[in-house]
Image 1: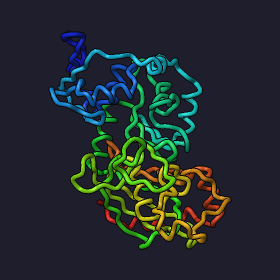
Image 2: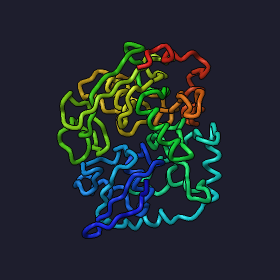
Image 3: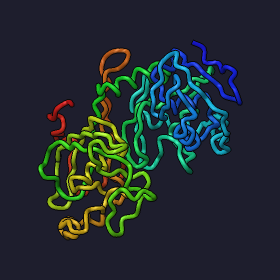
Image 4: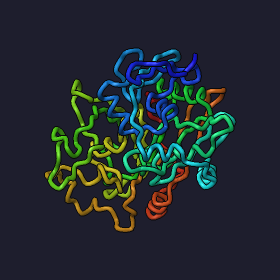
Length: 361
């Protein structure tokens, strides 16, 4: 199928999704075809319904199918995005990406994402892995593509496809929940019970400017922060995580392993807070226990000063069927600040991880 633009009224275009764009997210499709269009502007015209797929309103996360018609309204070029779109080849970026590689073959690569580096651009973010991947584009302009995301302050395994087709295949593997993701975290206190299942509905709403969400005294509102919602509530999405305590320094902190079944925004961080054991160093969810919660002022739960106040969360392991056959199984090392904490308390990374014994779904 051709993806060439067709004439439309008042500058409106209609583009047809090609075969190798099957399964691509709409926001990534826009980045490919209109790199000078900023993400915030794209989200705005999506909310207004100006972009449609086969005549229907859509979101940036909508997956495209081959042959679908995308209505593109007259677009405003975002100067920062345009500047980034024209960014020249960077040998520094190419070298940095290569240094992150944990596994690579002709179809995909798995990176060890560092703490503090964004995966994609956003408001005020110009340096990120998605942009750095431009440095690996081939002579035809084909570049590696992100398959999933990690938060800026989450370290660990990040999967990247080298072609659109492999990206689509891997996207389907993630959507069908064939990918097994294991995260390690260090949390305040020791969860009770020491292993279990966290099943909650999450929604945005505890952020600045949205008064629906609860807020404790002194808690600063954050537009990205997730809150526990009720089934049927607007924008509420179900989230499910299995967790298990691997080791602990009771009652101060614990090393836990987490296996998310769903993939909601900030899911693991919000779930850790929901059971009363927020992740150490989490600027959004740590320190938000209710004012009357006895654990809030418990001096025995105080985190030692030697522990760095950086988010203690790493995407430790990723296991999934390789699109070309066999199994992809990659493990990331601990980021420096978590290794320091593990060494401080004698946690052994070779210790059996009980999350391996939890259900698969």
